[in-house]
Length: 233
Length: 98
Image: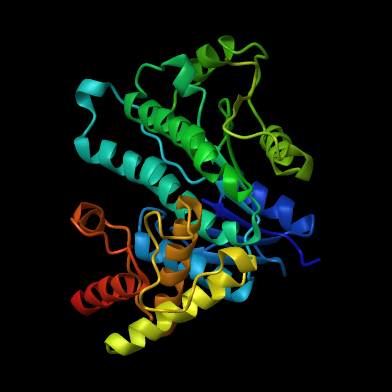
């Protein structure tokens, strides 16, 4: 049986990079993408520079996976951007960028990946939401709204793609020390952690644990689910 | 690329699509083969798969990416997906525009 193939968006740094390094080490063939080049060096890793909201670029990447790998087993829709600002002060261009990357990008990747996955009647899609959705975080209106859209998309795609053997689930991380949190005041993060059942920062291993669960062959009866870290509900 | 090339590519996609099907559900390789309605052997699941296959085939053959199930297709009085011929005609029209 050929090595399984995984596509990770936003793979250059942070959580995406940790995922790329973990799954290449475990024997997956990993294609990562981001808006800039990556220095991840592994025989099982290939990087594509693109914007996830660029339909032509995404289509070309999926076509290259189809031609070179012949299959796609897992899509990890990790790419995302955030911006913290009062809603009344947020530039509309910022809102547009957040929606384009987080919603349109996730939709596009799901759409194109599913077209390839359905050939093998198997696929695992993992989207990224955030605890900002259930927390209804002040200052995160655009970001939380975009992630709420990702949750809705996850549930509906789970229904549409079930017939093709493709599961679609989402993980909602708590704050994790990555660039996404750069600029968020420590006291704000501290307050956020106080709202979690388990009051600590998340780590990449917490995310990998949930993704492992979604990826398992035995998880073929698990779809349309959102799992938040830290006991958030 | 002319209309015959596109029709041939669509037939090729139908041939590959048939490889996934049992004998009872295989589509006849004919321009008149119905893809929609009560005279079609396809359910909605099959039609989606066939359209994906046709789009991929057109990309591979002509290096052009088109979306067959666009809003215009959905709003036409006579669906372009009613037969192999109408599908090929619609694909050719889209390829000719870009």
